[in-house]
Structure formats: structure tokens, C-alpha cells
Length: 84
Image (cartoon, rainbow, N blue to C red; front, side, top):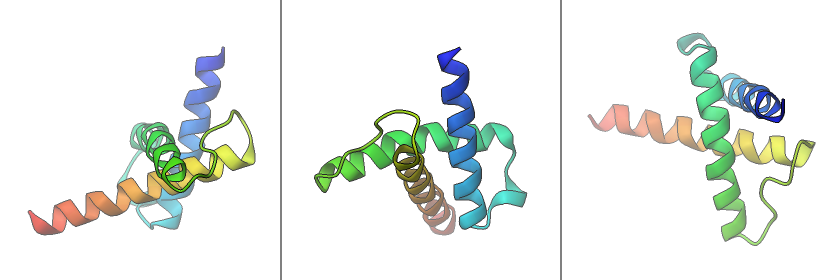
């Protein structure tokens, strides 16, 4: 059951990031889930570098960290597509 919550958490974080970065119409739910989960890892790493706590469970702070991480991934993806 906990894995289902993490998938839903990742989907929510990925969707919020895609809305913020205006890529919502270009990607589907699977990409939102992937970006949310990967964004949680990236966001946790970035926040750790600055001495702030990363993902700490199912709470607003963790959602914010995951959204920021997913937005960073979307931005990096745009940079890679432009350079190719």
C-alpha cells in the first residue's frame, strides 16, 4: 500500500512541476510519475547540498522538494533538446 502512496505522491509532484514549467500538455501521467519520483531524488540531493532536509515522508515539505527537483529535471531536459 505504501508503494501506491509513493506513486501517487510522485504523480502529484510531477504534475505540479509540469504545470509550473508549462509542459503539462506535452507529457502524460507516466512521465508525470517518473518526473515526480526522480524529482524527489534530485530535489533531496540538491537540498542536502545546501544543508536543508530533503524528503522526510508524506508532507508538504517533501512535496515541495519533489516539485523543485522535477522542475529542475524538466529544465535540464529542455536544455538537452535545444543543444541536440
